Amino acid sequence: MTASASEVIRRVLSRNPKRAIDDPSLAPAGIMLIVYPKDGEYCILLNKRTDTVEHHKGEISFPGGSRDEEDKTLLDTALRETEEEMGVRARDIEVLGELDDVPTTSRFLMSPYVGTIPSSYDFRPSTIEVAEVLEIPISSLLDPENMRDEARIVDGELERSPTYAHNGHLVYGATARVLARFIELLDSAPAKEVPWKRKPPQ
Image 1 (spheres, one colour):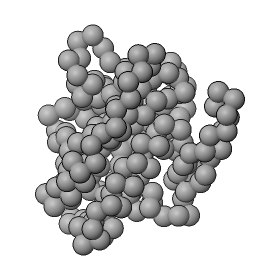
Image 2 (cartoon, rainbow, N blue to C red; image 1 turned 90 degrees about the vertical axis):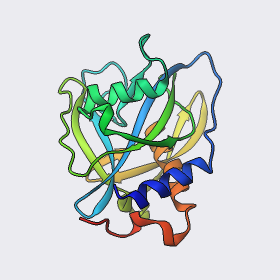
Image 3 (spheres, rainbow, N blue to C red; image 1 turned 180 degrees about the horizontal axis):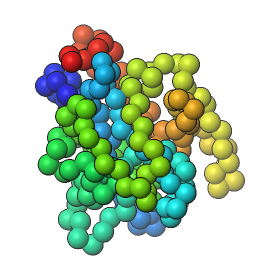
Image 4 (cartoon, rainbow, N blue to C red; image 1 turned 180 degrees about the vertical axis):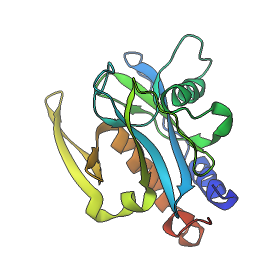
């Protein structure tokens, strides 16, 4: 990603400190939101989970997972899981900042990190965990035609949350809430600084 795009995202994240959740009943997890240029767009990396994983079978998610004993930090967790799931090496990821903690219905507490990788990366996804690699352009997420308002019953209460449609897939739940917060922060940048609304250099 160009230095200007990386710097804008880094600056936006630094101006909006992460909102942390302190809930010992939730299992800590680290996830990685990776944004990068590809084919004239700035894209975000997601994957469709297989039907053989333990949690969130068949759902769209970010690379990431629960913290292991050998992980010193949740960033270590996010980097390790991204390499295991997507074949993206930790040394190839430039970390730009963090997003707010997000709880999941499966009782995890996701700590999202934002990073970037070189364009046209050669992903090597795990066939056990990943059924499909999704590279969603930011322009698609910004398009009102692709947004839905999801209403679900959670713990007996009606909860509304954003949902994104892309090429026959629906991104919902905690993943969509992370995306919505990221898009909200991107929209807070001055118009002249938003390279994701125009084509990146090839």
